[in-house]
Image 1 (tube, helix red, strand yellow):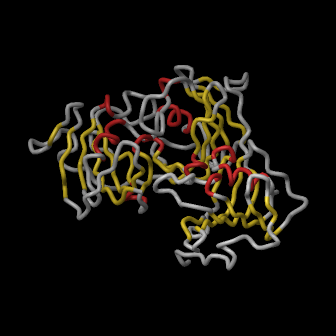
Image 2 (cartoon, rainbow, N blue to C red; image 1 turned 135 degrees about the vertical axis):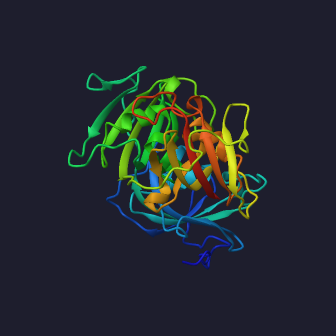
Image 3 (spheres, rainbow, N blue to C red; image 1 turned 120 degrees about the vertical axis):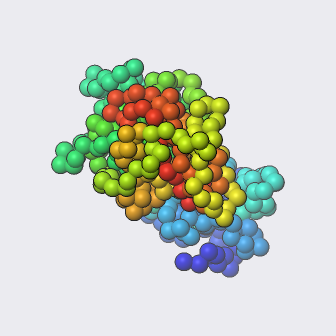
Length: 368
């Protein structure tokens, strides 16, 4: 698909047939679905969209990737909020949004009047789950609890070494929305053992296809920025796929103890560069990365490997164990490193997770 979608012929000025609102937005309906549900101020919607400046330059489009975007209406610029609430599921429209209802001259943002085409695919407004564990919830440890709302009993139980793909929405205990993979535009894809405790310790009780609510106490949660969280969280998640690890890859000779030429950080993380890449970009603690990796316990047992699966893994560095968060930031794109991660920077003796010091070979493919 081309990286540029041609602007409509009337991009510079609304046609005479356009309907104007009191605020100054002009709108032409391209398709109407009178039976569709009306869009409300608190809705989330799935849309395809393209945006142009009035000189016909496209600045953004979901259609380039072919993947619709999901937006909470309340987080959009004022002109988009107003225009979309005039529509229904199934509608398509072209709108002209004046600058004072768009980005108001903010540096780096599209300037002037903006023209958007929206195709409203459907409302996807999430239902807020109970903010405290229900009587049906299963309590684990440290006030961590979960409830499987929709179970796929024919699927195998998820293992710590499996890689899961899931979408989630999180709320604070106050009911305020905290974070969502839908807003981020990407599902969470990661090995179960690499996730933060609130996810890791519940997912081993679930299956591919399950819909789960998890009540996560502050001590077992994580903030997308990598900062500590304040307060408890409740997650609603759907596990769309699970990939199982197969046996393989022989452990390196120095798997048990870092060699003399390994370097050590103040935290106790040991590392060694196995080969340098051509890149110079380093990720940050909040970056999302694509990597190939293999992990062993100190006795040489391999417990996980994207190399063996034949597919790189993608995840945020704020979603993994502390040794990974620290270590991968030392790497540039293309580098291959070996890390010796002490238990206090790994899984800290969590039941069901690899125990003790862990050794990983990691290739940083991309910062995404």
